[in-house]
Image (cartoon, rainbow, N blue to C red):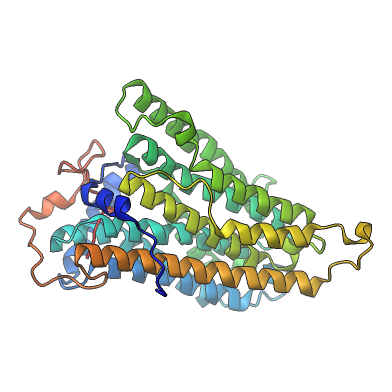
Length: 421
């Protein structure tokens, strides 16, 4: 890791004291998915490490991303006749996504079966999920196409997804409890079904208006409205309740808003670049721009997860934002007003390529470094179950969730529970 360490003594000591506290009240999760996952996990050999299940599921979402991008890099395929994306691509993408969702559901249960629960698993799981937050919406963008859903609107939808993923972690940073949002399970089912329908009926199906409204607009409004109604108010209420009842971390106002600073900075700088780009970068390279934003978002989110798990201060700034700030600055300057030649399309494109490459390498290095440091500290292997791991003695029923949305043991473990190997 070229001598770079990301975790200090305070982080490691905090991880040693960490106890996962989670509440999952989703009807779909409690009454449908958990019973299903409880049966599926029994077919998983005990020698398979839970983190390996997590990582395999993430790789399936990455495969979907590159497969769809191969046929429709610029989101223009929907405007071509015939549409150049084979039906089997959508079918395979639907299967991959549902399998990834299932692996994400059983990894925590596998950790309990193998007696390997610990803080690394939660960090590994949620960290990879933060990267998937940008990959999965892109599937839907390809279905609808840039003609009906312009890239700038795709961009704001992506920001909305980021916010919906990030705020529950801010909530946990303040309350000490992870209240799993209902939307996650419904979104995974919705996207999987949509991909399958596209493969069966063709992408043209989504051009048919419903009561005069195109499906892409229904999709767009559903994401915004669901966030305003089912997510943000509940998070605000839970945070308020923790302060009122003195059950949370009781952080000061300045400490409470610290996690919002780097995310807000990311949103502001990316939005300024999108709106003021000299060459319309969002129309020129929409997919790569989303990946760049998603990589920065994932890094910011992972650092917050580390802070809330180790009970340390959240970062006020993310160093990778410095690169974004410099590149965005050079891409929005009014060069003609300064008596200079206009910034060419190729130069702005290459600046985006370089920025995406740098932040991706830096983020991968950060993730690998944190995992290695935690494995070294706890004397464990990330993708291997220790031979001396204690065997779980609880009955199979203990894998299930109680009807009130909490979990049978005192730490409220769930399908996205902590697990370290």
